[in-house]
Amino acid sequence: MVKLTIDNRTVEVPEGTTILEAAKTAGIPVPTLCYLKDINEIGACRVCVVEIEGITRLVTACNNCVGEGMVIHTNSPKVRETRKTNVELILSQHDCSCPSCARSGNCNLQKIANDLGILEIPYDKKVSFTKWEKQFPLIRNYEKCIKCMRCIQVCDTVQSLNIWDIANTGSRTTVDVSKNRKITEADCALCGQCITHCPVGALRERDDTEKVFSALADPDKITVVQIAPAVRAAWGEPFGLEREFATVKRLVSAMRRMGFNYIFDTNFSADLTIMEEGSEFLKRLGNKDKETFPMFTSCCPGWVRFLKSQYPDMVPQLSTAKSPQQMFGAMAKSYYADLLGVDPENIFSVSVMPCLAKKHECDLPNMNDAGAGQDVDVVLTTREIDRMIRAEHIVPQELEEEEFDTPLGVGSGAGVIFGATGGVMEAALRSAYYLVTKTNPDPDAFKDVRGMDGWKEASFDLAGTPLKVAVVSGLGNTRRLIKALRKGKVSYDFVEVMACPGGCSGGGGQPINDGQELAGDRADVLYGLDKINEIRFSHENPSVQKCYECYLQRPLSHRSHELLHTDHNA
Ligand code: SF4
Image 1: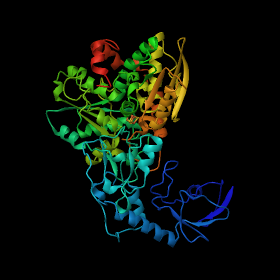
Image 2: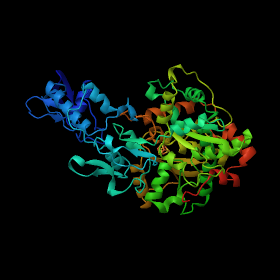
Image 3: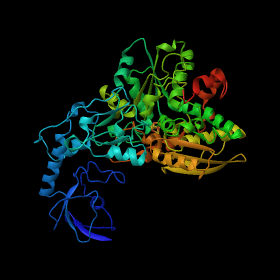
Image 4: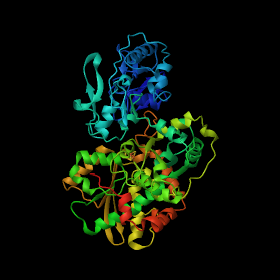
């Protein structure tokens, strides 16, 4: 152990502890900007500088370790002055149009500048404006980039994609798409992790809220909206709501006030996905064709983009089932249009997702099977729906709970856990067991696939057939798994992949809580909702049963194939 003094407090920490961590254990906050624990500990921004008695120069707290007997000051006049200068220099290269920034009010740079009392910037502003492809779902504002390197590190070390890199030199240094590519030419999976790990507003999603406001104001449009499982665990965070209060029923209430005509639950189509994907899995398990086995889940469009760009020869192993978002869109403009007796062309289909990749997915040419344009017209992230709530002057604290509309608002507990890593696998196994044995397993029989580990394995007995499954989240883990599979070091029957670490609960469209990884907390909410749901199995969802009875006939039927499956190479 090492004993030292920080701000007149005696602290004892293990050898090798950074000054930042040591201060934290003593309850002393040191401001940071570029720091991301275990991912970016490079001291680039020099906001975390501290003074050590006996050493003339200041040192960065995030990447320097404590020493026996050190006396450290984290907020001395010299520290404050240096920190202020460092932040002023950062601001001199930053477009400070805070009112029009997606991160206004949720920006660490803004907070630090305010805390330091910076009221003007005493340096010449050198902000260059570079063009970006504004139709792409991911937007980079070069003029807001503070070169903290977080996006480079997250994309490289966590997601293994290396989309970003340093470009230019000297005062023209910036971060840009690597290898001189345009973003549309790079292999970006659109997981959005660079956005959620950016401390400022240099990265954001394409804003589609105006398209939805216009549709809501159009009397000829019937607006149908679906809410994804993971959104319910996170939408209330920016409003400071307790998780128990920020229920999906209060989100339904907010959206009804906005004027949506029909508010439905993606859990319904998650249950449909299980019926289709589970049946497909049992079919593939029967013949174990080399081309298509082991089967990969296909509900994460970030993962599908990754596989298509990195390992195109393995695309046939993807389940042909569409994602729950796209299944819902196809059903809204076919089955539900029939139920309403309306022309599907009049339906404007919106989805609220924790995801960036789904903004791209809804635009794909193979996602318009209901015959009325795109099956999903607009995808909003959780952050965008939160912005719409604010724009509508809705006070979330005053909302009462309201029910989803029926029948597409009915979902099972198996559907809700789609929002967490391992959830799709668990839901699929619950129903696969039923499809084979005609009896339900214990709903928690497959809980070994839960948890935040990036690569999980489990073995089960499916009515006499041994099954080996894997669940992976984060594209770096995914690449490791695929390499191991290709080398024959591991073998599985069924693999669930989610592009975002922790699955959709940690999705790139979720609220940003700088420096905090909340995927695990949000997943706990989803597992809690599964536990108290009266329906724990997708095959017991009465709306899904009715839909098969009256419309689709059975899983993998001709109509199911037309509406709910796709050729991922199309
Ligand atoms: Fe989207 Fe979820 Fe995939 Fe992330 S894990 S890319 S949020 S579907």
